[in-house]
Amino acid sequence: MAWVLKMDEVIESGLVHDFDASLSGIGQELGAGAYSMSDVLALPIFKQEDPSLPLDGETKHPPFQYVMCAATSPAVKLHDETLTYLNQGQSYEIRMLDNRKMGDMPEISGKLVKSIIRVVFHDRRLQYTEHQQLEGWKWNRPGDRLLDLDIPMSVGIIDTRTNPSQLNAVEFLWDPAKRTSAFIQVHCISTEFTPRKHGGEKGVPFRIQVDTFKQNENGEYTDHLHSASCQIKVFKPKGADRKQKTDREKMEKRTAHEKEKYQPSYDTTILTECSPWPDTPTTYANNSPSPAPTFTSSQQSTCSVPDSNSSSPNHQGDGVLQASGEQIQPSATTQETQQWLLKNRFSSYTRLFSNFSGADLLKLTKEDLVQICGAADGIRLYNSLKSRSVRPRLTIYVCQEQPSSAALQAQQQTAGSGGENGSGTPYVYHAIYLEEMVASEVARKLALVFNIPLHQINQVYRQGPTGIHILVSDQMVQNFQDESCFLFSTVKAENNDGIHIILK
Image (tube, rainbow, N blue to C red; front, side):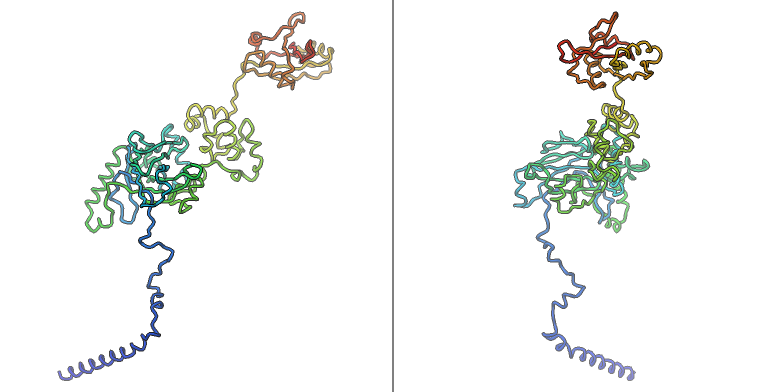
């Protein structure tokens, strides 16, 4: 026992000696010359703050806030974006709130701003094929829009507009100083864009995005101010209510620890800031804080009319020549197809067919075109593509008489045996197609086919019995037999001013 106590004393005295030795150099090692706080702060464990970043009190303040009056789902994890369920065709309020601090953006005080509301795809895979997806929806739902404004319920919005070529967007003006609420209706449901028609829970998510602009120096609303969006899913009527109830019941069955991983459900949905949608004018993007959109797709660029660089190298420079023809050719490039549409008065569909070549357009059936363009324009476009001209009411065949009388006699003698002149050369007749059964149309077509100045033709006669000249009137033209054959000669008018045409 005494030996154990002795060992304890030895160990204790050794520890005290070591501790005293470890403290003996502290004053020398941490002298004023050896110690530098900057060296300590330079250690990697201390975060280096970027002096360019704003301080907490200088956090950027968004000028506007958009709040949609629809509850968020309770089955969304903490760090995920909120998800809101909407019923198809139901009106939902989006409150447009002025969020500026005192003195912020004085240039819009007392002035109107323009907002564009869109329903777009959330899934990036669908964003890349957005144009085709929306066109497919349009074919299945002709005459419908993906997004509408419920104008009677809306408050404070002015000059509402919808573009027939943009079925998923609405725009309007509003005064930030006044109460403003836009009621929207989404008509597409999430399952319409899935490969197989699953139930509502398997549908694709959409985004509701709001972009706001102010006037530029020319009075146009092109200067970007603010953009925000939120994620939604759209169900058939009452489907959103059932889905919200199902999510709530699932969360109630979870343990308290599991519930901590999920966001609570809020009565309203606050749209979060994002970059502007890319198919706005160029000046929008130039004034935005970030040139690249957060939830966008490169497919948007294909919705605009192609420029000269979009044609193939083999056709650059000669696109106008081919597009200027009456009938579009299968080899026509996208640019030539656009020019053909413009030339044939289909300018409102150039954006719709911006990716179509001549071959693509010619493959569309009459039913396809009616579904895309409606009955009237669809039939007109189909007839133009197939070059279905108006059927003539009367066709006559005309040949100019040989100058010598001998040739005329030979023609008359041989007319019944092949229509050859005395030398055996066949007479060549030209077809004259009359859409109007009037004498003036006969004179105009003869002048066109035989290169005779129309103003030089005084009268058109038909040679009758015993060689008399009968004035060709509208009634005579109406009694012509279809596919009649005529020789014609020209004689100078009595006053030597112009000519007469005699049909024989």
